[in-house]
Image (cartoon, rainbow, N blue to C red; front, side, top):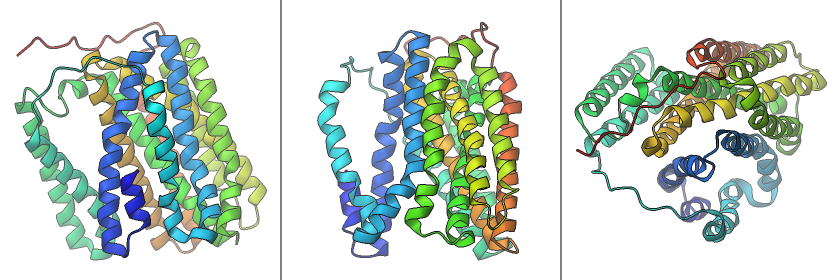
Length: 374
């Protein structure tokens, strides 16, 4: 909340970037904790599935509703309104915490994994810079950046394997179910957030809508995400995670491919194609999240949710960077849209394929037991 206020009051671009860094660090502290709380607040799997569905619906619909709110705030407040709106929302959430969050005994303190944290942050920082700025800097610089990303990633993995109190315990990714569910999260991030950027550009530059009307045109997307996520939580105990993830991602892939058929005057077709895209994404989010929580031991539920959040954010970064590349190198916006949506469809199909590692309904993949005291 304080970081958002500072962003809204930033006097220039450099201070805004600094305050955005603080904003991201603050969000990284509480977002993983929210999923960890769900596991402990809803111990019964069926109840937890419904709670995860509602959680996913609110999260995904907020991303889709952002353009609408942004369009409403842009005229009276300019870009600062996008940050200042977080202040009253954050204050309301802060006041609700004592009444809504159950009390839990503190977990035993763990030693901070400072080398692992530094290597992980450097890996993600270099990857972000390579994806966003690399193409502009030229092929040699981009290649050098990618080599640096690979080297830092390898260093991070070696440090985590050597540390008994690693920030990201390697045994999590040795569980194929956990790894598969995280790949699904990465694929959804690539497909969904890359498409959000492309759709926003297409509606404004391709169809000539202003920011507010482009945001309003994406309201059906937000509505389907809410409905789909709530329904996903109720369907999960019946269908099982694997069937629901596969069905949802196949449906969303069909939606992405349908959007490629829209021409410069097909607003109605674009709105119609958003429905299976959003519904399929929503159906996959809840079982993917629930699978991550179920496949991790209880004492690592917070870490597991943090890993999933980082993986999804990385996927969103890749999707947004890919969309920007498609716009930069496409012959026109419609061609760029077709390229980006085809990549989104392929990402969804890859998630549906990898979901085969997730057990069928009735086959419970037991998480690793908690380690003995060291």
